[in-house]
Image 1 (cartoon, rainbow over the protein chains, first blue to last red):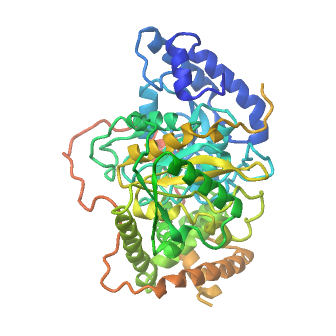
Image 2: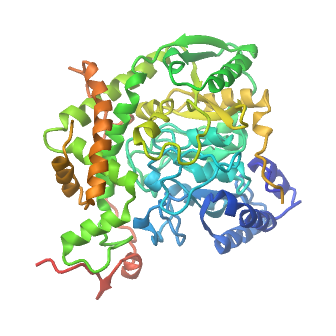
Image 3: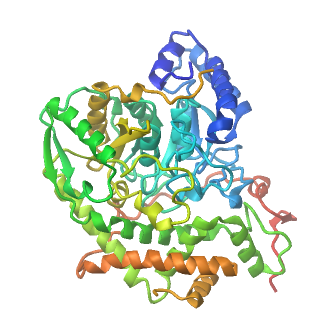
Length: 486
Length: 94
């Protein structure tokens, strides 16, 4: 039963073949059995989940059922959950219990969705492998010696290992799409502003966006329906109407122009990734799509641009962790300054410190023009590249990540190498456009590979349609990792 | 070298971070490698290019100033590392 998708489980709940409490208990048992191996969860909210399921069953009994009612979901641990610890996988928030729900959590609960718990991540979402968590290392369900991707590694691994029906992640430079590709699930970063960030612990505010990680494209549309839309509590959320994203669940790409950026198929790409992505492109071509080579000429500058902007924003956002009002405080400081210094130095891990240092440097007097302003100008050029490309094509199609998931420990000593693994995802965040990653095959070692479909701002429906057409004509999403069934 | 150990110490102070000698050395090395990589951007002539700070709206989001319920004092203090007499407690400042 834990293998079901949202839509399959919804049908069974609706026909009253199963209750939400039954399926929630099955998933809690699955977590208890599998998670000691995978370590996707930081908190399992057993009691809250059962209570939520009982409430959902009462809703269903009175005929009030919507697509998420009674569905057990899990949330990345950087989204606030009232009464449930929200740690950002950081020592500095180790004991933080929010008094409020993030808007996305609120919306899921209002529909009767069940929150199973909170998922592991790189500390403050800074990383591409989930190895930067202060608490535990999450394993890839396809190979336990391999990373699940990051920073939403727990969110991707939990979906792949059937430890939840679907999950939410956040994506600042690829943190939903890259782990989705690594774990063989579907992951979408919506347009910047499409989903409220209220209650999402801020990392880089002009780039962060919440999105779904699911077992198939239909579930992606359903979960996006629940979380998308204007929120007065987030001044950057877009005040534009939200369509029913299920309208994109159409198997048809005839005559659609798919742009393939030539800059994305060069140096350093794993040959198997390149082959599987081209196999995928050819599937769509056989279904009537037109393939067109396009150019995103500033792609080579995206990583440098991104790591200036995101660290600058992070250094400012993370200034709030001072040990005064919430979170960790160092023991027995002599004075206020020592309290700040000790609290932050003990509370943050190495990657977070490194990014705060880099961002503080980039914003410091005398360097602002050379780094932050320069990067923000290059961002304009990168955004312009997408605008021009979209005059010639309907969607852009690329690999999600240059390699399949790498081995645990392989890149931890070299932050720059780790940053380079985001090469295909970060320009999407800089431009603010939506993108989805769907499984497109496997490496010879049996690791999943993902293809990324990028759309124009607020055209999530279109990328869902391309992704759905691809998925329904292939069977990569039906393969399951070699975990023991229970 | 883009950045010397003294500058790393200065930036750490600005960021309210206390680094060990080992961390200072590692960070100096790593930050230099990263900053050197970022030099790439200087290949581009960006004179006259408007910076993008935000991709969607450049407008201010105004709303009515309405009185709404706020958290009671106990709830606001629930996560406090230390509290006293209904306030957040910190080391002596003066």
